[in-house]
Length: 166
Figure (cartoon, rainbow, N blue to C red):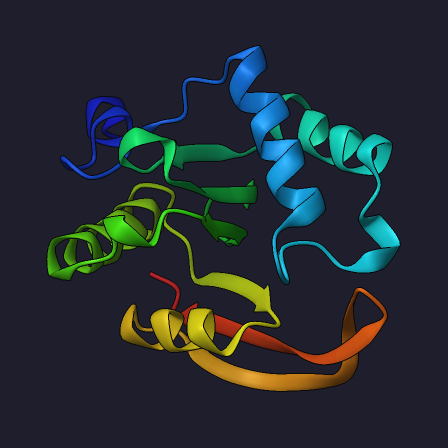
């Protein structure tokens, strides 16, 4: 495993340097941003606990976008098998061709360095589904009423990027 490559995968993404201010900012984003967290988990205490588990309890690696414009986390990492992705982007100005190219590269680095056969992501947002498709993910299914935000129901799309075991 190339630790230096995981630390510095490209110019767009860097390992998340979590500070108390960033932690509180992230909690606020997850509480209030459209379609970030389903209603049943959208309380300060639940989000704080979930983030604490991601950052200290389960095998995860998180990267931040330039100027802390978003994060991508590869969570529940099981080397030689699979991981889940948590992707949140709140600064849309970071979105461009270089961002997409570096995102694809980061996803491939994680797949290769951990020898993963499956990456999955669950998202209610059609825009993020399109982004995931551009990164090589395929929609496997949609759970009708699988996500609830401010009392309104949305389909939860389950996407995966897979490859044959080596």
